[in-house]
Length: 420
Image 1 (cartoon, rainbow, N blue to C red):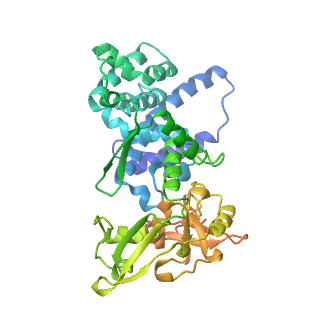
Image 2 (cartoon, one colour):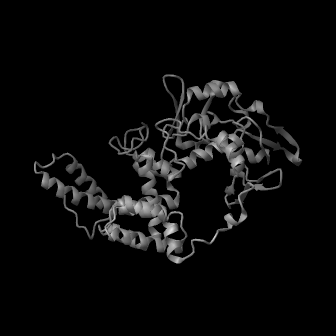
Image 3 (cartoon, rainbow, N blue to C red):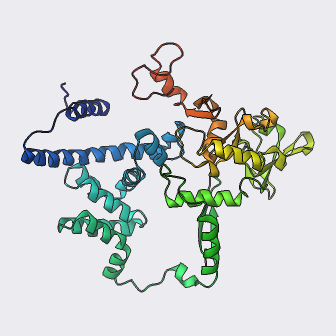
């Protein structure tokens, strides 16, 4: 294989690297232990520079949200499911991809082979929660520790207390922040609505309220098993959502919309307090358990107000949680206990009855994804009668790789077996 490095495209370089790695992996290690030591250090340095390029690729995917077009709710879920990374490695690479633009010295030295991947990820993890000013100071401080010969473990220890290190150097360690000034006798909670309808949440719980929080959410936030790779923050958010929705039983929200909106129209819906909801969002909300859609006909005449009976009963949900230990989407790891009941053939206007053989469990994200992109979900049944949802790539990606026989998706030797 001959590659002119300066003229080669990024794709050609990646393909050449893949071919070299394939050949190298098939070779036996040399008999000389000294040679193996030297080769290990050289190969590790090359792998670290490769991580620099990989961080750029991951960063672009993450910034554009491309992974969502392929059916993955987050970049971390894509890294775990498609690339088979363990949670810790996926978190390291994603943090590096997101923080490298704020760490020019780290990015430059990693790309040049002058800084190991371990040091780079240690520094990026330490600065992830700092503002830009403190980030620049932390980068210089931690790189100074690296240059002094401290191990990655030692640098990580310094990184955990980097705020204290900066405060000690600047003489500001005694200045209380605004949250400290508020006091800790009473619980408080503030929320800010984002432009896309979500909410930022910040607060403090006194010991009594914290005990209620832990007693309620801790059991629900435990890992569902050895394959549950969500971090504590993700599991806690899912547990809180489950509690707030009454275990998917209680009706908490009423969305008021025209019949035409639910069936594909563009007229916005609204909440009972008058908050406008775009039509596509209203259709997604109507799928969620714990939500009651109030349908209006001509002249704002109420046509139907959904009731609990429209949703799966507690007994049905118990059966479904037995059948589906996790989301029905094969690539998804969200536990079934935190999933929503999905009408396999679509619930809108009663097209699918709430019968146990017409229901499955899907996480909230994939429930909405299935509704908005039905062409990217392949539904089959396994030998035990469970529905299996498999993600398909976007239509434009399938068209670009559709060179196989009729009825197949992608070439027979494709690196991604979409139909499998």
